Image 1 (spheres, rainbow, N blue to C red):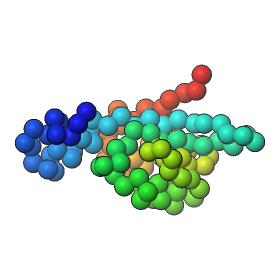
Image 2 (image 1 turned 90 degrees about the vertical axis):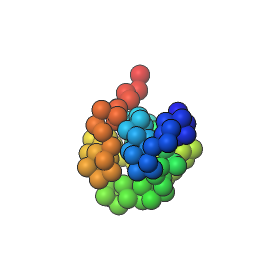
Image 3 (image 1 turned 90 degrees about the horizontal axis):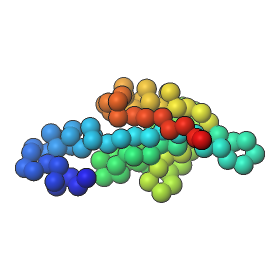
Length: 104
């Protein structure tokens, strides 16, 4: 959904709040070679948030390594519940907009 269509002349602060509420964040685990587990966060708009700073903050809070690849944040280890809690409390995302994706 484009920001221009969503805002339609609304004040910038209200527009950014609306944009944040429309984001659906997906948190999932991926298994890498040698049995390594990575928590992947997708769906955060890189125009609204600086993914580099967000990833750095999450890595610091979780005491884990990680990176940004293709617009998604990858954190080493299983930190799904901690990441959800941080996104809600620290960044103001709505809990119903954060979903866990289970691998088949």
